[in-house]
Amino acid sequence: MTPAKVAAAHQAGLQVVPWTVNNPADWDRMIEAKVDAIISDDPAELIAYLKSRHLR
Image 1 (cartoon, rainbow, N blue to C red):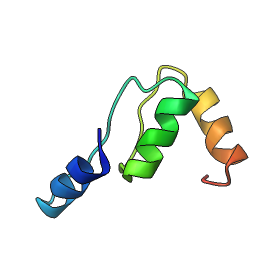
Image 2 (image 1 turned 135 degrees about the vertical axis):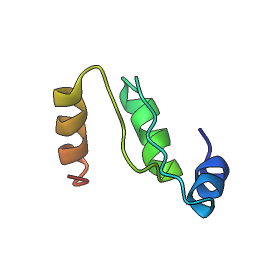
Image 3 (image 1 turned 30 degrees about the vertical axis):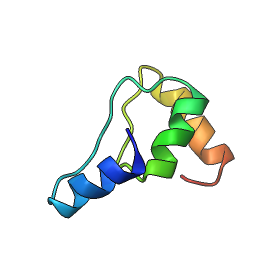
Image 4 (image 1 turned 45 degrees about the vertical axis):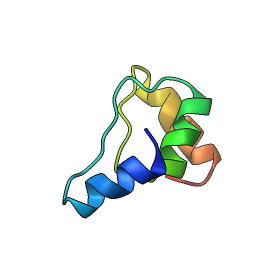
């Protein structure tokens, strides 16, 4: 998932919600790409991570 692909999807009126994103490095990439949501096998860990970065 790249920022350009996310932007193109958004311009087409689509939301981008990648799933099975399970580690902080990938979460950072998704945040930087401006996805609309992230689906993870460990939502509690993802929420804690987002809170630690003041994103939730």
